[in-house]
Length: 488
Image 1 (cartoon, rainbow, N blue to C red):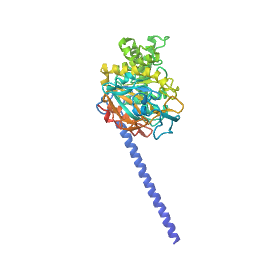
Image 2: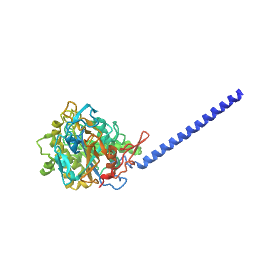
Image 3: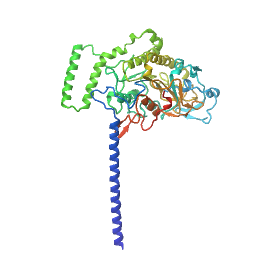
Image 4: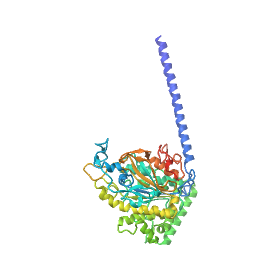
C-alpha cells in the first residue's frame, strides 16, 4: 500500500510539473505574441521618418484645424484666483477659515484664512468674462479665448509639475510636447528648427531643458533654445576663419560623410548626423534674418509693449514678436517661457511670501506682450491656423499661508487657456468650487489637455506612439480624453 501511494505521489508531481510547464509555455507564447502585436501596432502608428530628411512635412491621422502651436508657459505657478477664476464667495468670506479645511496643511505647511483676490475683477469683452486687473490686456481679449477652469496636476512640486505639463510625466527623460508634435508632423520650413524654446529674459525655467527635450525620440525633434537676448550658440562663423575656408571645410566633410554613407547605406545615425549638419548650415543663413526685429514697424512694437522702459517687459515682448515671426516662417512649435527658476518668487510666479508685491512686477511683464501676440496673430490671419496655448504648472491656494502674505501650491484646480485654430471663442469650460480650491465640474487632467491639443493638430493621441524599452509610449501615457466641448 505504501509503495502504491509513493508511486501515486510521484505521478501526481510529474503531472503537475508537466501542466505547469505547459502553462508556462502557453503564458510565454502569449507574452511573445502580445509583444509582437504591440511592436507591429507601434510600427503602424509610427510616423514614417526618413533619417536623412527628418523634418519633411508629414500628414496627421485626420484633417487638422491647427498647423502650428505657440505655448506661453508661466513658470512658478500663476495664481488662478488672482487672475482668471472669479469667486464672489472668496471675496465675501475673506478672512474666514476654509469650510471643511480649517486646519489645512499644504506644500509648505499650515494655511491661514481665506484671502480674497488681491486685484479687482471686472467684466471684459462682449461676453462679460470676469478677469482681474492684474492682466487687463489679456482680459480684454476674452471673447477670443477658451478658458479651462478645472485643470489638475498630479504633482505639487515645481520641477515634476512642469514636467507633467510639458512632457506628460513627472520624471525627467520623457519627450516634450513639442518633440512629439514635430515627430508626428515634421516641419514646414527646412531652413529653421522645427521646435524653438524661447527662454524668459530673466533665466531658465525650473525644469530647464527637460521642457524641450526629445527624450527617447530621435534627437532631431528636440527644441532649439533661442531668444532675442540669447542667440543660438556657435551659429556664427569664427572671425578667424574665412567664408571660403568655412565653405571648403563643409564640402570636405560632406564628401567624406557621403562616401561613408555609400559604403553603409543603412546607417541611420550617420544620415541623421548629415541632416543635422546641413540644417545648421542653412540656419547660419536664415536665423539672423528671422531674429532681426529691426524691420518690425513701430506700431507693432507698441502693440506688444516692446517700446517699454521696463527692460524685462521689453525683452519679453520682443520674445513674443519673435514667436510670431518664427510661426510666419514655418516653425511648427514655439514655446515662450515667462518666469524663470525658483527664486522665492522674485523672477517667477512662485508667490509664497509677498505675492502682491511680486505679481505687480510679473503682471506688467506678462500681460501686454501676450495680448499683443494674440492681437497680432489675429490681425494677420495666423490665428486661423495657429493654436495659442497659455499654461502654468498648477494654481495657488485661496488662502494665505500661515504667517505670510502669499499663497501655497494648489494642484487640485487651476486655469489655463487656448485661443485660435479649432477652439471655441469666448467660452469657459469646467469650474472649481466656490473658493477656487478644488476642481469640481468637468475635472480635467493634463493628459486631457494634451489629447485635445493633439486632436486639433489632427492626431488621435492613442495612435501617436513610439515603442521604447518594451512599452508603447505616448504623450498622454495610458490616459487622456479629447475635450470635445471646447472644439469649435
